Amino acid sequence: MSQIDDLPPLRQVIETFGIAAKKSLGQNFLLDLNLTAKIARMAGDLKGSDILEIGPGPGGLTRGLLAEGARRVLAVEKDERCMGALAQIAAAYPGRLEVLNADALEVDVAGRLEAPIRIAANLPYNIGTELLVRWLSPTVWPPFWDSLTLMFQREVAQRIVAMPGDKAYGRLALLVHWRTDARIVMDLPPEAFSPPPKVSSAVVHLTALPAPRYPANAAVLNRVVATAFNQRRKMLRSALKPLGADIEDHLNAVGIPPTARAEEIGLAQFCALTRSLTP
Ligand code: SAM
Image 1: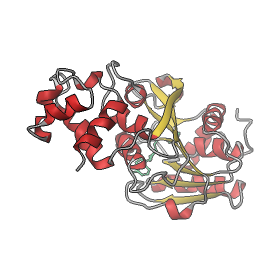
Image 2 (image 1 turned 180 degrees about the vertical axis):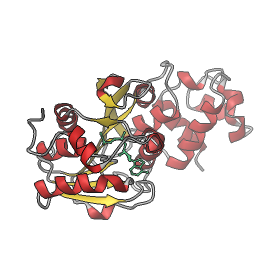
Image 3 (image 1 turned 60 degrees about the vertical axis):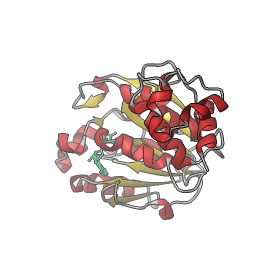
Image 4 (image 1 turned 30 degrees about the horizontal axis):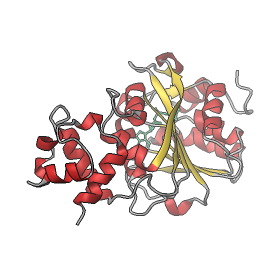
């Protein structure tokens, strides 16, 4: 089966340690180690990097990351049942795998890793977008990580990489495009997972830009974009009214037609409007 290491095949690991997939934890496991090694390679140069992995489960992607040469992996897994399987991997790669049995939404990991840091994960779908938004919204930029290589439902991946005019274009795409280069690097059918989810998936690779693409105050930009897309079918002069009675003047000042709709406006224009509205 697996050629990437000398550990047992994942089906056997799951049986040995009793890790039957739980829906409540978003558990859809990748069992093909050649596929997990391929996903690991999408994360870039692993040899000189520490990797943060969220939700290692029985360890398919973890083994891919280690076999592909990751300097160190810090894996955060909520499900205690996975600890035995992960300890077996840690023993096979001495000093290179640290496992935290914790909730990724609650644990602070930045201080535990050394730069350069890459994040790679087959994320639990119920917390994937929340984690992504957090990683994209630290108080200082550049963030603690250099790149993110993340599995999402295909529909969410499309929202991440969408451009103006695309059906999936909105708040998430603008936040991503402001601070990163992002692209879909792999599509996966439901059958790639066990059990297969109802929808297709995709791996997105995001690289942190050294500085945001255009200057803007993060909180104000977030409010402008949220207000604009809150009523995405409305013209901006009425959708953005909550930002001030003089919003039409600001739109005109930065060259955005007040009759345009949010989905037609690019990042550069949203940032210009943000600067105009920032005291
Ligand atoms: N990485 C494994 C793979 O590719 O086969 C498992 C992926 S599975 C989609 C998601 C994993 O995230 C599960 O192992 C689940 O237990 C874990 N998980 C779910 N919620 C979590 C949370 N809040 N914090 C950390 N891990 C979590």
